[in-house]
Amino acid sequence: MKPKPKVCVISLGCAKNLVDSEHILGWLAEKKYPLAGGLEEADIAVINTCGFIRSAVEEAIRTILEVSERKKKGQLQKLFVVGCFVQRYGYKLRDEMPEVDGWAGPGEIHRVTELLQESRREGSPFLINRPTFLPDHRTPRVQSTPPFSAYLKIAEGCSHRCSFCIIPQLRGPFRSRSPESLIEEAVQMAERGVQEVNLIAQDTTMYGRDLGRGDQLEDLLEKLIQIRGIPWIRILYSHPERITDRLLELMKPPSSLCPYLDIPIQHVHPEILTAMGRGLDEAKVWRLLERIRSRNDRISLRTTVMVGFPGETQAAFKRLLGFVKNAEFDHLGAFTFSPEKGTAAARMKNQVEPAVAERRRDRIMRLQARISRKKNEDKFGQVYPVLIEGARAGSWIAGRAAFMAPEVDGQVFIRRGGAETGRIVPVKITRARTYDLVGEWA
Image (tube, one colour):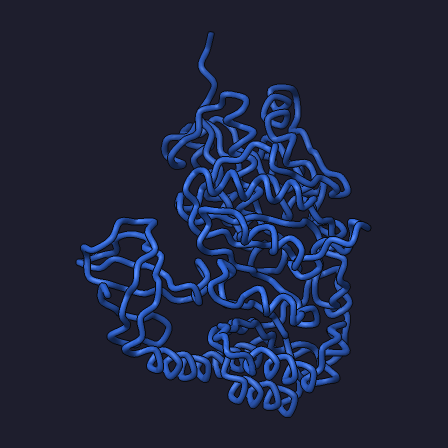
């Protein structure tokens, strides 16, 4: 029997998309497709795309064209494209990119092996439908993150109607996984040695509200923190309107729930928030921050803000800038508005020039750099548990404290020796950088 071709999966976009890519790897492995360690080893490439904003679309197109060059040179047999980019642009991709052998939207990725088989026939197959698919603990999955850290996607889709966002169109309505399925998958992670479980969804704090059985995020967390063998559980992508006192109480030491909240606020100017379709005004955000910081527990806060939204005057931007200065978030990301076709915001008047938006973003990030440096300097001499991630260039080992999420926050750097990768060990902070920390074995 002729051996099956080796397949390489290229994952673009966010952590939620990465989980989809891990399921794709799982389905391929289940059907005995050998998985290539890199594109240079592959006979077939599957690109799992993002299509959220213009830059993601451009990255998807660039990646498709780069990989298709290998196919033209005979270094690749087949090329398949799946994910949000496909859902967004639909069947017209077939004519515009004939070099692709098959397509599938995010609601059809579970049919990836069928896609590979159908491509043997005439024409490129196209699998696209309204996204309703929801994986569970039985869905095949090959973890692609380091073995000690994994993402647990607790829900799919989104039911918010922010005027700048097309995620509901690409991913379908918000739909929660059952708590039983999530507990089972978390147990599986613990059994294979995962030390850090990061909960993700489009809005993690919306979890359970669609199940019609009273389940909420806090109920799920109470069960997750009882699982033995998982020292760190972190919540990402939490809507600021649903941060409850019960949730904060669950973070109280010695809980395995990391003292970390990722609460994107987007803006604070009332007219901009109304136009965005966001309900939390500046006064409510301040009350939230005061409620979190009034506790004895030190909870690290991350947020994201958007500049250049239609109608954002210089005065509106300065109000946001002042808020960032006074709020002093531990971690902050600033993004420029992207007018995406199909959104209400793209049709609004008073669009802000991209160059103006970029200058505003850079100004906020310069401010945040100073805040971050100051907060890191305050950690001098403190000892924190650090998850060792592995060696870096030179004589350094990198790790993260519980107040640092993977990929988006800084790291702690320690001289080599002292601990194995994947272990959580005490580290004393000896030096501060803008976003990173330097320490020594405690």
